[in-house]
Length: 78
Image (cartoon, rainbow, N blue to C red; front, side, top):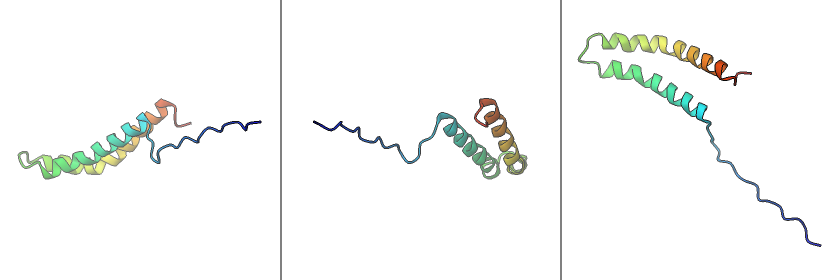
């Protein structure tokens, strides 16, 4: 009698992101890059360095608040 054929195990990639995970990563990268733009490229407006500094100080709190709200609304926080 023949032995049953075994299916080869499908290998998943090491890093696999969901669409929501990719969106969160891109949002965090954009929030991190925006203050740098205002602080280093803001020679035309004198207030741009102030805007950049305020974004550096308030950005992490705002980012974590928005991510927490988004995750709780999506239902993945359970």
